[in-house]
Length: 406
Ligand SMILES: [Zn+2]
Image (tube, rainbow, N blue to C red; front, side, top):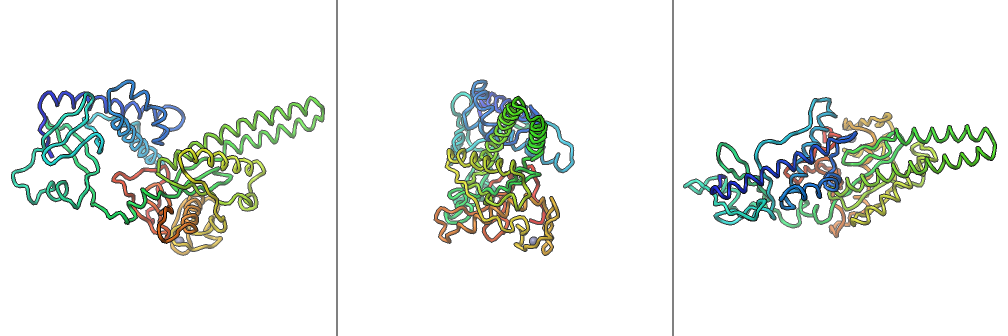
């Protein structure tokens, strides 16, 4: 709907729009600095929040909205790259502002909007015929709940785009999801050190390279057999161990951030006891997996996120889509179900199975605080393995696109 905004208030909205766009572009530029594009909202928040608060007079919720907008845009760029399409760093120029329930207060005749200098009140401009309009059907209807809005400046008018969703009963999965959270499944391995059910991959290349280098140098030094060589060997060991640990700290931080970004209440790993037999991992990998698990466990605890291990049996052979289990479903890194034809990266399929297994083992049936779904990059799997589309209006664009069969 159109908003009735006088010239003083329009000037305030314009200033707010300017600062909002500056903030979105600032966060986007930051995300593109460095070797990889940062898409984690948590990381972007940690990196840019203070700067944006210092540089602008934006309300904290506008700062968050700007960061979310930047993160979503960066995610869709990465998604395009993964699909082999071209995409460059997004730049926002279209004058608009994102509002939520803190920054916009919806009244019957008008809305109160936060600006860079206090609030303004703007009357709704509605058609004379108030029935059979979208406003009557959604915005003024008790059956729909207003979830947020955007203000757009277009052709000399301030337009108000309101997001509504059907009011839901408290016992439906959608609300239970926010209360009970979801599970992030994590698969550990040699080629990919970690892969999550949300489709984020941490490659094992770097770690594998260091481990080989360490073992080679250790071999060289041992051949010399002198006291000098022995001391050097220990020094190399400590230095390499320090580098391994730093990498594992970084990955564990990113895993916890992934869980926070997706509102997960549990991070599920496979049981690590026999992981060497299952994955052909070296002693070094086993050491790394145990470290990583321990780091994630204590870091997740800070945010009230539980960390658990589940029975690993068949997590790599089972189809996360239909449940069919067969060794031939998997061929190295590719998974293709012999029964239903579901195709995806084998480690990603395993990560989903790990999440599902946790979910099934912990479902009480009464929904007493147990997680209700496995978090995917868009939507989730419920305990029956059925796909549920995302509750949010804006679907997350993860770095690993879900196969269309799901
Ligand atoms: Zn299948």
